[in-house]
Length: 118
Image (cartoon, rainbow, N blue to C red; front, side, top):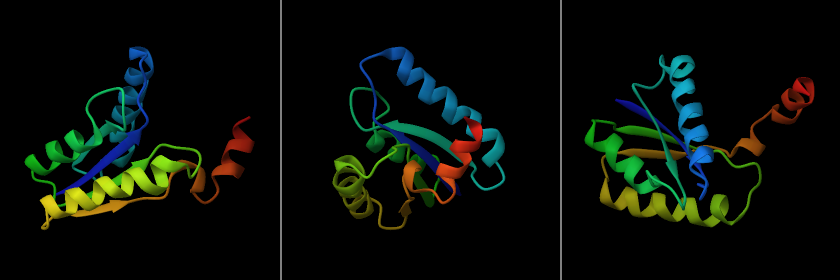
């Protein structure tokens, strides 16, 4: 079973966290062909945490999980923090394939797409 987790920073502001959750739910429609499980996780300040989101999908039967960092730049969380969680979770779940996808700002064509939207 394939899973997808949108990873966002998290906020002290509940409305911002709900916006991320709603966005993750809206992705479910367009990505349902490729992923049976869709979810989101926060790096800090909100739940579910990234660790909890991975645990939930593994418990639901996911054996291949793609993790998408919803970050514009290659900051510390993208370069160091998120990969460190994946190392831990790969040790915890050796039979699960966890793949960290490129962050939002690194997606090919993102700048062109954004330019056309504005």
